Image (cartoon, rainbow, N blue to C red; front, side, top):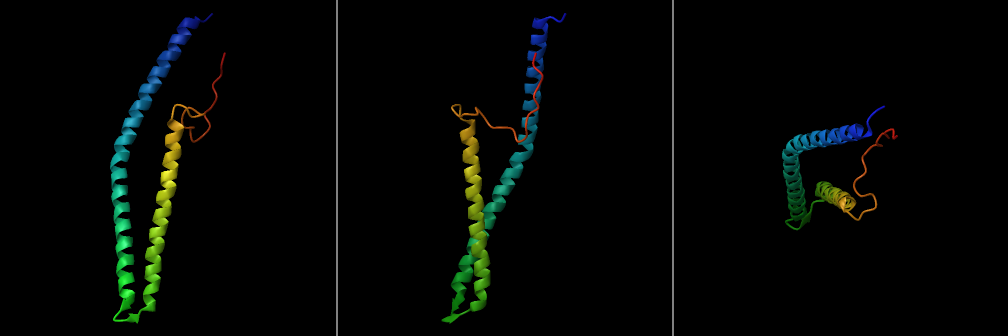
Length: 125
């Protein structure tokens, strides 16, 4: 017959090893993602600046020498649409991050973030 104390100790040792492995994976992933996040933020900043500058330049040149240039409405619309789309994306991203932060709070119903896929159930004795 198996010793329940020995089984319990083996389970704790497995949990500690699994936690160490997860910590190592987190460190590796964070090391990879941090430079990617910085690069992504730089690209977004440049896109905001580029779309804003493009829209501003076109808006000022539409009325050049008191002549309305109708052909410049298309680029102005596209630059404006780009700004609106990036604003909507930033808003959705912010709402998503707020939901994740709320889920991590100790008083939250779930007690943490749910995994993206169902966790297989283990057999209990």
